[in-house]
Each structure stands twice: as C-alpha cells, then as structure tokens.
Length: 121
Image (cartoon, rainbow, N blue to C red; front, side, top):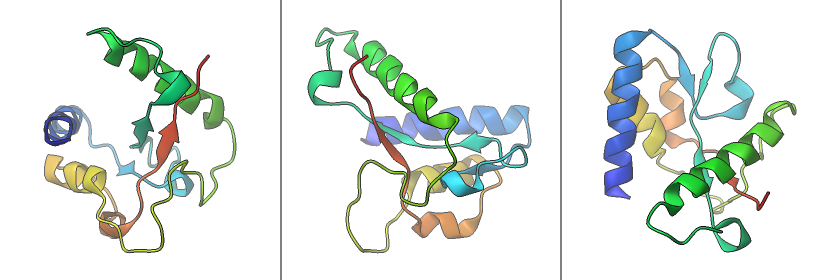
C-alpha cells in the first residue's frame, strides 16, 4: 500500500504541475468544473485472470472497464462497491491530492473513497 500511495502522490503532483485542475473523490462532485475523479480499484476473484508478473496491467484494464461501464450513470452517494461501515474515514487519495497541490475540498479528507470492483469481461 505504501508504494501505491507514494506513486499516487507522484502522479498527482505531475498533474498539478501541468494544469490547475480541481479534483474530487466524491462521485456527486465530479463535473466539468471538477474533472478529476480519484477512485480506487478492487480487483479480486474471477476478475483477477492474469496471475503472471504483468498481471497488474490486466487488473488495471479490468478496473478501467468497470469504471467506464458506470461513468455514464448518475453518481449515487453510495456508489462505492466497498463499504467499511459507519465511521469517519481518512481518505488517503484526498490527502495525496492536497499534498500534490491539487484543488480539492478539505472535507474530502474525512469522506469515504469511491472503490470500484473490477468484473471479468
């Protein structure tokens, strides 16, 4: 997880240096004014079809397809496939966005991150 978080912060910093984009981790805030939606992919079970060293590429493709299947639907507050219960979360993607210098609403630090489960295609 630490390596992925470090990579996320680096990628978001690269985005921030190239454009003053507004980001969000909340589907209901994703709009033309806030065009960067950060979300987490969850790939397991039947969706994890490539167990080779390059399986992460197949995982990323499956996750992107699952996201694309939903992108045209109206965002729902409970759009996440993973619900970790009633608690006050710490949103590491929002923290990475702030760290990178992206514009993101500070209340997203304590909002649940959108998690999309990949499905076998």
